[in-house]
Amino acid sequence: MGGDDARSRGSTDHLETLYSSTRAYRRYRATATGNATDAVPVAEIDVFLLRQVAALYPQIPAVMDLAADATHGASAAVWAECTGVSRVFLARAGGGEGAGGSEEFFRRMAEAGLDADTYRCLDTPPVFPAPPGASADGTGGQRWDRDPVFCVLAASEAQATELIARLRRLTEDHPDALVWVLHVGGVGESRILGTLLAQLGEMPDYRLYLPREISPFLHTSRLALVARRDNAAVADVLARVAQFYGGNFQFLALVEASIEAAQREAELRARLERLEQDGRDADVYRLETGYRREEYEQRVREYEQRVREYEQRASEYEQRVREKDRHILALEERANYLEQTFLPWKESYIAGLEQHIQNLNAGALRRASNAVRRVVRVVRRQ
Image (tube, rainbow, N blue to C red):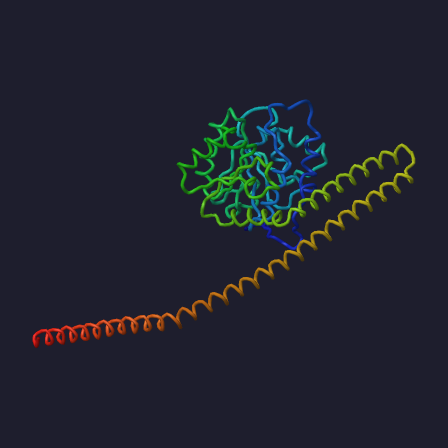
């Protein structure tokens, strides 16, 4: 990537947890006023997945969000305080309150105390790569002609046809982009999924990924990803995400316990702050918080010990399997040796027996013939 803002994956990058990756997103959601029943929901597991894929992608991507209108800015808040993306463009995909180009999103970001320096509002989606001499942010700064692009789309089930039209335009303008579609239901219940599958039948260079299919841990995800078939990085990144949750399912229990402990700790800290402000039994409550934290940490250590024991048992089992494989291989080699040694002998022995039988038959015929001649001679003499 060129320009002053060029960055690469560094030693400071780290993979977030489900809890830490959704912290900023929850702060943004807390600023909502009224019931936004018409907003397309963004599940927290999908926030986690989007940020994980961005963190693991070989290059730091730029994000073009055309879902801010439909999600009332929630899809853009996914990337708040995220070091895994270089810039987030809020492009209007249609009218409506809470559209990406309005000031509502930035007001809520400021109210939540979130940094919005990486965000840019555009009336129309930018085209990547940028034409010569142009810049994607309109400031004369860095060109994004070599940045990978993550595009985000969302629509209600009733707007499935419009969403497909946007998808076609995106793939024409950005052939190498990764297009994320939010809130895609299951097979047989989602018109969006059915329309996507039908459309991709006419786009042989692209394929559909459903992250919920790569691991049981992600079964509640409602994300869909459309990417080029020749983009090997997509399959590799999704495989790495799946590996985090593979193996013994006790790991999932450990993750769940860690998340519960972190959430409980956050709740206790917030309660402690309120008690300190009110001047009520702050010292006693600190002792209670410390005791409970030690209890959760002890449980986490026990889960870690169990994981190590399961790994040890798995290693021993693999060793026994390898020994059995070697024994089977030795038996196969012995059988091959016996077959190669005794098969020629068996064939020669059978041939000898057949020859002996033929000799016996010939001798018997001669003796019978001689006996008949003798009888004939005797008869003639009489």
